[in-house]
Image 1 (tube, rainbow, N blue to C red):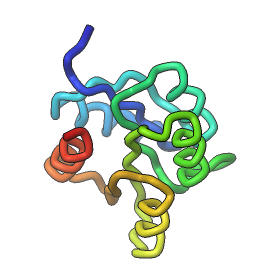
Image 2 (cartoon, rainbow, N blue to C red):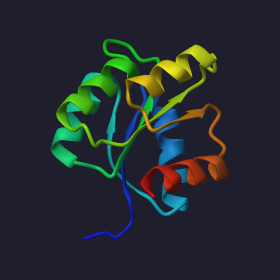
Image 3 (tube, rainbow, N blue to C red):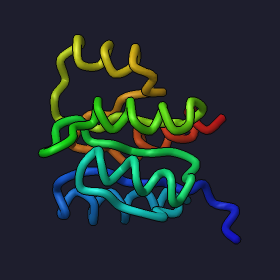
Length: 122
């Protein structure tokens, strides 16, 4: 069993998932699953019970806000960090109000990501 924090990575971009997986691994996290939309993220969260979820905001079918709400309905203690290129303060505030623990902007800065994720886990 790993002692590294586990992460479920949810983004509709396969390229971003590959890049983020490498950055997360380099920072000492284990990516235990991936999802391409919020609905898949909810299902994978229930299967995997990761330490935290890194979730894109804008995705087809089921967006990050819906995924966040579904994960928190399944587990009110879930730690979800929203990841998006949308930087509007209103989006950030809405996600935090819905229960996200933090918010990361794309493109991902590995040092910021590590600092924020470790802070969420603390």
